[in-house]
Amino acid sequence: MICPPQDQIGEDKALVPRAGMSIDSALLTYCDCPSIVIDRQHDKDEHMKPDIPKAKLGFLPTPLAPLGRLSKFLGLRVLIKRDDLTGLALGGNKTRKLEYLVGAALAEGCDTLITGGAAQSNHCRQTAAAAAMTGLDCHLVLGGEEPELAGGNLLLDRLLGATVHWCGPLRKGEKIPEIADELRRKGKKPYIIPYGGSNALGALGFVEAAAELKSQLDAMGETASDIVFPSSSGGTHGGLIAGAAAAGLRARIVGIQIDKGEAGDLPFANRVLEIARDSASLAGIAASFSNRDVHLESGFTGGGYGVVGELERDAIALLAGLEGILVDPVYTGRAFGALVKLAQAGAFGSGPVVFWHTGGSPAIFSYANELTVNPAGS
Ligand SMILES: Cc1ncc(COP(=O)(O)O)c(C=O)c1O
Image 1: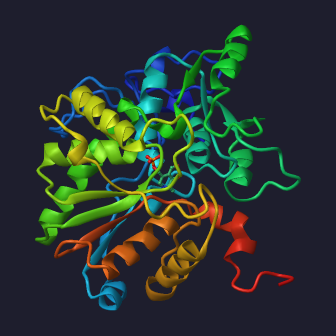
Image 2: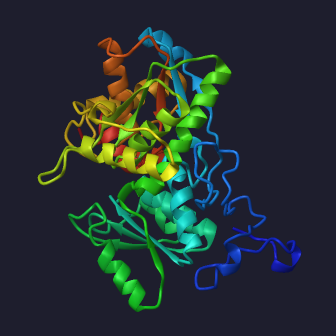
């Protein structure tokens, strides 16, 4: 990022400094770089309480577009919401959550972002990009062992300047508190972003996104019957439930469960419900939710998280071949495969169905073997 020199910006503006420098002056001001606006107003967003800080990280609204050839193929009208085009280091759904989470980190005067996930985490890659944009350090706590050659999201984490901590079988940021303590002992002020960015604050990004979709549908003269997307740590899903209630978006919100439940985990639907309630409360939305509001399709988890099977392979090839759009092997490929199966089973309303493309394309490159129809050597 190349910021203009401090003396070339007006009195009411200041650079958000790099990590290690004071950021006090940046809190209520902004840099001329399009990336960094600490927006405390939300004046134009009637669904949001006015005093929640937000860092402007993405290019929003994302497009909503018809998928003509796919619709013909399925005999059902399908629209696509392109959150793969949010712009933050190859885009994805986490950009929306990070706008609030990084806004809080800057407002609290933190100098470091710390989060965790799988080795190919899209969330971690976008967090690394958000840190670079806002002049913060970034520590990523990743599952697995360091590979000889970094590919996909991991390569991008490195290019974006993140420090990576490898944690073997722990891929959900379990070691974050330990690493945050170590950073504090070294005089740093870390801001902890939870696994997947999925807490009430992060989910506000999807409370807003529901309103964004509603106004796009209204402008097109459409009323969607179903909204389909991958659901993994629950923030996208919970935020959409809360936001849809506030925006009067009446479509069925259908999360495709990505992870198999692990022993000791709470039922995932409970977590989604909790996030919906907490984000609604944070946004000042007067609505109550029950289990009936959480629609989760849990029959498509295949071989488990990150295991590519026929469903994902076929889905990636179908959307690429019909529409020239890429979905990823872990999240959007699985969710789009589920959409096709559910459409063929007549499980949706009258349409249009909105497929929410939540991103993930960098992971494609680290799954080359699994995605090749005749893998080398077979
Ligand atoms: C590309 C992509 N889609 C969907 C999801 C799931 O979103 P959520 O964690 O909010 O459930 C993720 C989570 O990492 C993701 O990377």
